[in-house]
Image (cartoon, rainbow, N blue to C red):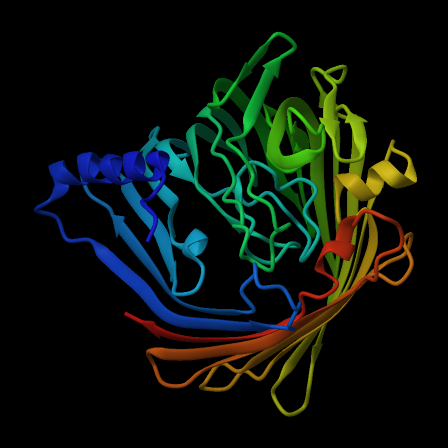
Length: 432
């Protein structure tokens, strides 16, 4: 098993430091331990693993007392028997909070946090603060906690929040054996803080302001975010040439992340069983004249707009079950067709989905959706999942994901990289 990354170790030490003063207190704890397996369609490659067999564990601790109003810790670890690159620990939340004022309408918090700024089910152009575990579902990858200082003040039926982020967490990359990766080993990321300053650590001031409000049946938010973007890297390709024969003998790949000023917001409006959703963000890169050499030629950060819309309808059936029907779409504007495909797998896509909740004692639920590219031909992702409790403490979840995106040109673009990576999965979990 690989040793946890340095930032993970530091986070665990932070937990110990915070917990020590309250060691006498009673914590509210819960957790999960699950056996997880997935089987991929055979790609006829010896360098990749077509089977994944591992353990997943999560712990969730909360404390409320006199020294602090609330302490929260939440994190998980994965250990895979066949792929050592999937052996990791991730901190999701590790923070303390104080509620201020006579009405306790102000909150100050410090520590690692998960942020959820999205309004839509599958596409999330606004929800970009947290780095991700990229060895997970590409449309909704698992998040890593982000170190943050937050001050929130309740205003009307909403909040005004200020955030300071002292460092940027790097994403967790799939290893070379993973079928959900690109089959290459990525080097340590380079953070481009300004035109003349590049470094291999994410220690740089970042910040955000966010305003949320509820008016009648509408919820809306607006934000301004200045940070090191972790969602749209440019991957540099360095080719090592044989000194005598002058032929390529090795290649190294380094992701570059750039500072960006993002402005955007969300809107949700409920009406007679219908829920309408809108999400939009404009990305203004601070140093868009920096050029990086990639396998597709020279590339530089590209200012653009990402938007997503959604419509959800809830139907109550006579047998006591509920159906939720989803229609969502996402688009990137301000870039040409080729660059859009490089910026995101879902550069112009539409999703149709259905969730069926049985509302029984076992909590049975079925969720299926299909994502179809409306710009690039023959690119489709199908997802099906079924879950239910077996007992009060045991739960099972199974399903499949199917990718259809045959290669159109010389280099794989977008969903084409996953054309042969369809798989089935099974998770059996014990909660405590």
